[in-house]
Length: 483
Image (cartoon, rainbow, N blue to C red; front, side):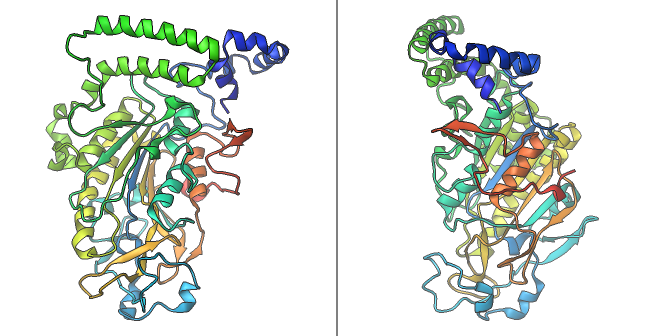
């Protein structure tokens, strides 16, 4: 995938003639691939090749940093009320590793969820009382209650969820999508990152720019971070005394110098630099209109809530995500912090749910009203789940929960997703998976499939190997949640 396109894009005249022995083969290849392969080199990316017809054209990935508590939100376990303050049986734990935050505890007392649950929609999904708005959309959503991961701490777990590997330095999901499909709008990046600000800030995790790095992919596929205050993008505006005509002349001269250097050394990052300068110039005109959220009608704020008027809030960020995909941005990555509930679940979880509940409902309804829902894939969830046993003090009114990689819940909606689907099952303790386990790589394979890409054939040659998002271990598409 994209090998021929990258060859065309990065091959200089000097390199081409130095590899003259390949000329006949490349000519034959272009003849065999014909106009379709040449169309893949389109500058706007809209005609990039896919392996199968894709159901989705865009992705909005809502990452809840810290790991939401599945048994307090989506994985209803009524039997646990009988187990209050009893120790987690060894037969359930099975010697599985613990974090250093609870490994020293003398006991692991069961903490049933203090929140009420009810069934919603035709699918009968059990939902927490903390998300009444989201509960109205369950028939548009697919819940995976059997997600699992190998990582037990935040940094490697977030890295694994974002890049398919616990070791940093790999391209993230957004970069892979940008590389595979390109942009639908030449005046905006294919991949944009937004970081929302939670109401409660008791336990904030680090969110570093390497999470939206392009890794070994060309640098043009890295995520572009938009800020919630000040200039949306640093240095997007011209300095005093510099008008657009002068800026255009400066960029033309800089491009000529870069082209000379590129022809001499053939470094693809020089090509990236040229493209990014040109993109920045185009964004000077497109970004002000994009970020003018105040121009949205009152009906929008009735749908999303008044919090959407406040820059940096989750509701404001989600509204911006809708505006981005509406304008052709392929991949919008949203982060919301403070889901790391080691303590004070009663004080923190309701605030977190209030931040996201109406906004998530509004995003689904808004996309539906605009005819964008069926082509926009939405993913919501964290990097792992939480333990059924309490960390620290336990009472019926409050408790804490440690990291739990063995099972957790994520939901998807929109492009190619079968609404009203509940997939996977955990044991009565929400500790182990008993049916239909789903790995991080399975999730990635499914998302690529919905975009029209075969995860086994979608590769990039790096260090002599055909690298891929899903790695070398077997991965499966979760066809039961796909239309």
